[in-house]
Image (cartoon, rainbow, N blue to C red; front, side):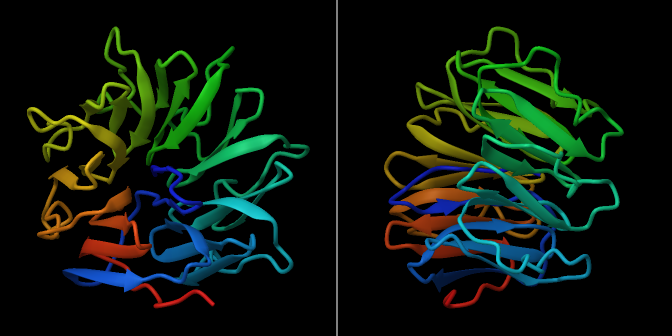
Length: 302
């Protein structure tokens, strides 16, 4: 439902904010250096290797792990609840898996795409010209891109809402608004990154501070007092995570499964991601640490 993207030494760590499973504990995995990006859907995991090849594993009930034969030259991946999306270096998009709501029906002729995002049952792309295209489940208008929207530089997809960051540092959101997740605070500006959870929206400002709004039953919008020097944000279903300039991580919100219990001594973090009940961090040595209710990950991705 949301995506966090940050480049660190040609490595990207992305998670879509959808349900996860297994035990509640902290564990680390030494990832193979050939992997440059990872995404997580409801019950499946996807990895992108530096050679442009995609690997997927986990629950495959909707074919979300059936990477199309011959798919190559991929530069970005995203995972929805039960579907997977890949962006190729030629600017085209490929999607597979659950398609009851048309989330895998890439519009004919779509090209010049530079970023992708996958919500629970919808898919969103950003084109080179700064415009946005969305398709899939649209009951609440999450795919109704506002008329005239342009100059977009980043996109995020929540469970049932979509968010766009414009070049001027302002934010636009649309779709389900029952919790006020699309009510962008008046006067908000100087935003450099966005994230979308299940009913809440989070932004990072260029001064290193964080603003969050929307569903707050679990305190996911209660940004810790004095939090500063943040360089990246992630929005889980009901929790929020921030990465600080010094390589440490702060998390708050729903914590039933320990997803906000940052492991003691965790440092040298260069990227973060948040799922429904788990949180992940990428360390400078390319080790991935996961805490909360989590997925199993292989030791290598050969």
